[in-house]
Length: 95
Image 1: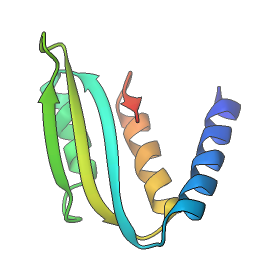
Image 2 (image 1 turned 90 degrees about the vertical axis):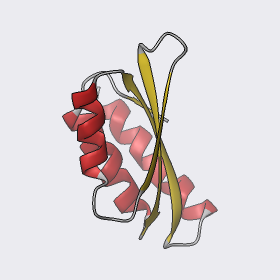
Image 3 (image 1 turned 120 degrees about the vertical axis):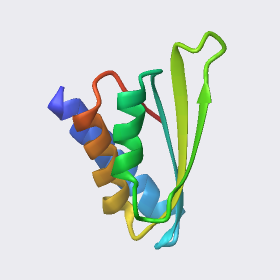
Image 4 (image 1 turned 90 degrees about the horizontal axis):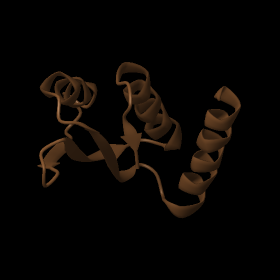
């Protein structure tokens, strides 16, 4: 599984480097079960860096979509945030 993750992050890094000028605004999207503690963990990861966070619950309130707009310095910082979220939250979907 680590091999798959490493390829994903390597490809993401190449894509981000080739499609954006850094620093730039980046939109993170996550989907988690509607659990207040999981949502708070994600919010805390982006705390104090000027992030604008929007949350939307699914129709049946089982899941929450979290969109985070924030200025990131480079692709490496973007990947570090994705890794931090996936390390701290089980069953999170990274978009």
